[in-house]
Length: 294
Image (tube, rainbow, N blue to C red; front, side):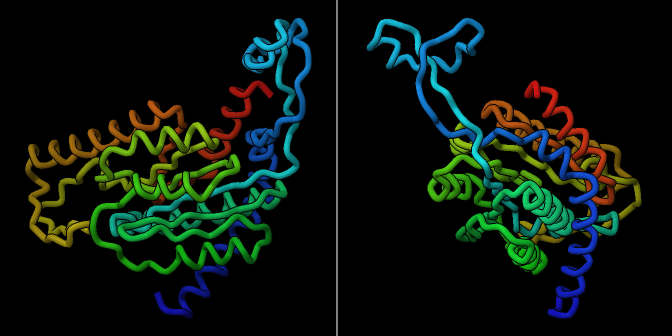
């Protein structure tokens, strides 16, 4: 993407996401995440009706009388977006690559966070060292992240997702709302660092897929290229077994990702290229709000 194309793309993202975040997402986002950043205030004697999960067992043991920890809602939260930059994210068959979708999602979520007076940061990861953008406020800061994502430079090879999670665990000490945006394909075992991140932060995975990845269409002989390895080959899509193997591969990769997020106690939402993701995100925020009991 040339500098002129990038500037045009950023402007389009700016116009679209400002309207979406202010008119649609602000209220749902605020309801879903308000109060997720809590700071310790004091300890007091347990009273009937208090949540037993808030009992301070050290003070209780020392005094011989049940005490609970009192937390107060922090005035601002930090939103951290981890985005996959590997070559597989450049794939798309519905007029939109997964990378473009990730960029738009980052802009919408970031803008919604700003409307909620939250700070926004990003960790962009691929096959090399993660690139960290510390949380700040301001729409120009969001546009900086968008520009970084808009430069669609290929990073061949498997994503170093586990290392990126470990990096995030090292650089983020304060609790944050963490959106992990990627396709989670061929990323190995990342259960341990994901579990650590999910315990420390409010972690949500946004898995981006393309319909072609989920189900191979019958279009005869098709030249294909593995964006991660760079290998090219010819695929006979008319072959039933070939399509079945393709679908089985995707379902296995999907199942592994879902299992690792579930084991870590984190949520995951699947979004597809060429799809209207607005209703899905709104429903996700609404169900989250209801589940939190607010």
